[in-house]
Length: 353
Image 1: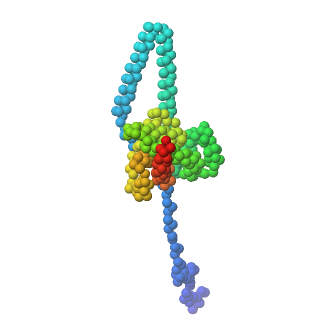
Image 2: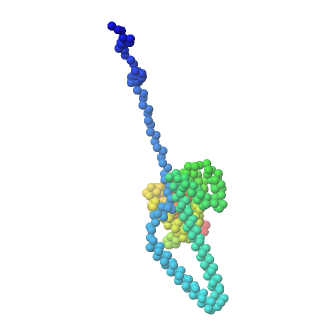
């Protein structure tokens, strides 16, 4: 019987590598899960609007009315040209000197008409430029649009270059313009440096016109003359505010700007005085202390101030945030106090007279 060279091994147990760590991991205590905390999202900045664009969008398109107006004006121009040509021909037939004098006068009138039309076109173009500036600045603030911010900065420079009262503000803005890249912050920087001094001047203009309306309403003997004077003061105020913010309104541009202001008031429901607004004055007895005529003048002054605030919003190149807009309460208190002081001074003036 031969012996086996490799005798069979006895049964043994083997431990597989990696089994022990897994087993230890299985019996190991569970680690605490990380605590997840949700931070509150930052509040989004309120959106700004473009009042001029909204006023134009709210306007009702009536192409047939424009076609009728253009046709009637064309017929009137043809009739006037035929009449003028016939008159010049008759003057030449009567006297050669009178004929040439009439030609010179007609040429002078045509030159004046050309200058007036050019100024009207230029004024309308300036209003259109401010409207584009409002849209670009609103897009830069609301949508963080870099291209719109660049266009708005370029338009601001074009708008205020050449004005002596804006020279220092433009130099200060140019020094800090390259430090800010964020479009909304760049627009707010331009607003703080360029427009805040103009806002203070606009406040003084509105307060002065409102006080003047208060006095005119007080001393005007008839209601018709009262309405005429108040309307003229409102038109002058709108024109003055437009010139302050960079526009140069002529007659037609002033009428168009007035329509925009009225549309802005209608859209914002600005003509209606709320119950809180009336309670602010009647409850404190400011209007109750005034006589009937000064109370009427104060009301007209307050409405003039409301129109002035709307005109300031429409003419301003960069629209304000709703929380930063000037309220009517401060102006109304100032007007009511002024009317009260004027009423107290009136008996002294009459006594001296």
